[in-house]
Image (tube, rainbow, N blue to C red; front, side):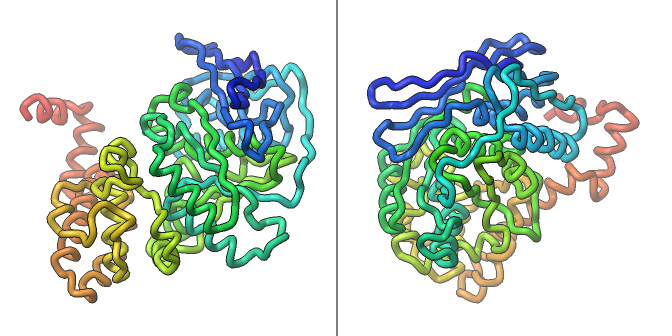
Length: 406
């Protein structure tokens, strides 16, 4: 993969930093990745190649590219860390992909922080990002180099690659105003660079956030990415405590924040602050939420999960979601993604204590179903063992016959 034509331009009140990605091993069309920021924002776009290195290295690995050649100066520390990130992901997901050689004809340059002692948070308005913001305000006093001085909202990473809706933007700005921190929205067309949603969520998400932080690296010397999983359940996913900090450079330290608390503990802290709860954004179906003129659709898995969490905590969801109290019937058509039973399991006991046995039973059914499916994939139980035997002995013949007859 070759990265060329790096340039920065100002047009119609927007600063745009871009680079062209050309594939060398795959017959794919070139893609121009760009980071766009309103010129009125109190932040500065970087003029080096570090953001594009962070954005490109795992994508190059995923598609079998043997090298990543960048026609720009890059940080040697970032190059070393990016290579390490590739090895971590390869170790997790099987070494079916080759390592990626990082090359730069213009040479390496160790960047120096332009604004030392300033930190930013990649801020989605979700549970984990909100909790990172609240904890930061509590533990780091004004003037401390780790205290957040900027919130960064990223457009282009959702499944559709769409811009943030006016309702969501309003919530982000209201949250930033209540916290007393400016929020800036930066757009990047990541979904044009990589359309495989599974790869994005399982391997690329943290690298994309790191790339966004590097695009704004002249504005601060530290950036935080909120952890979705606590330390007791460190799922190997796209944003991870091993991977995110690997994308640090000489001028920018990347941090993975919030490993010390469960999701339910984070929701409890958010619920204790009305301004945070009122501006919470958890929805994964932005189109459905926008269709209801709301920041949250109330019906996707993450919306339902948060509404159940609030019910377990005896907190009203009114205002945060279109609906109020949740009904057990709303969970009937829901199916949990891999490992997400971990988020739901702690809710059963407090729901029963709350007098919501109907909801507790519905949650227990969801968990049981998710674990049956996972046992099949893990080849546990007699059905799982049969699946493994079919694969190893019969070459998948039985599975193909069953699929044809279904």
